[in-house]
Image (tube, rainbow, N blue to C red; front, side, top):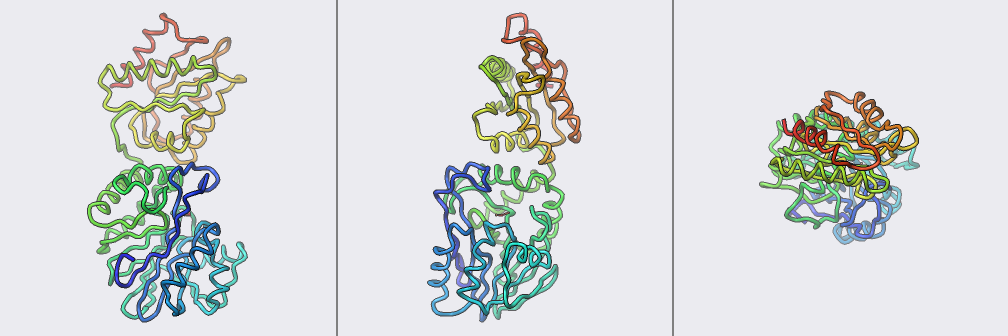
Length: 383
Ligand code: FEO
């Protein structure tokens, strides 16, 4: 419970291996759900089907014999909608509130509530002592998304926005790390939509943000989260520095990447991050690319193309609308180096990418004769 009238009834999922079948979640995940207790009762969102029974138990205990009048569905992705049918079996008379498009998605997912009410931007539902004011938030990161503001509690129920990886209590003193990885990998493509909803939220007196994942935010944590979301949604630079991202088959490209990273450190680069695209978490590499102002790509040639982990990285950066950044290139090739040409081609499809000269080519391994070109690239990355 975080207020007299709002109870937390969500669930931790500590054993989940991959969120959305792709993101490592070493500290698990949580699916938040809240009970709003006015004269009428509203449940704010269901949970992932992995946690149906636990959630229904939390609900039953908190309801203490009462029945919910409403279930508000802010977002239809199955980590929030997957328990709706079980909920409706337990509480069939509940009126489900959702956007028009959410009801279309419910039909597609096999959810057929008996009592429904479409809500749209500006609509209100009075619970008696609490009011649900609905805000359209399309493309955060699905089209049907709504948020709800409750003025009596100065609380914004923000759907996936302001969410993070991890169980509810993970990282109590470091919201940003896993919120950033979550944001860029899940909402990164939708910066314009996030900006639009932040503009709407700025007109409200919000003291608490209650997202669908991660902790409720208030006070300084809320202020910092909004500051970071403003940077991230505008694709602005959060951290001055360089990410060195390498895809190396036998370790020679890795050696060149590590040598370049050391050159950057010696030249006083404020932050140098390095990631092995074949072994490190891809989601973290994506996050660091957006976080930093600059990036160097180091890649081996493979089948007259680029080594597939680099292809995946650049493909994902393109999907997430990576933009407005400075990128250096180092390629390796033993007989016909092609990686630089392919990487340049992929970067040229992205918006406002400046490619730094010189592009460095090494043959099989880093030689003393390559060092001037590598120093030149390090120097150019520092400008
Ligand atoms: Fe947490 Fe987009 O679902």
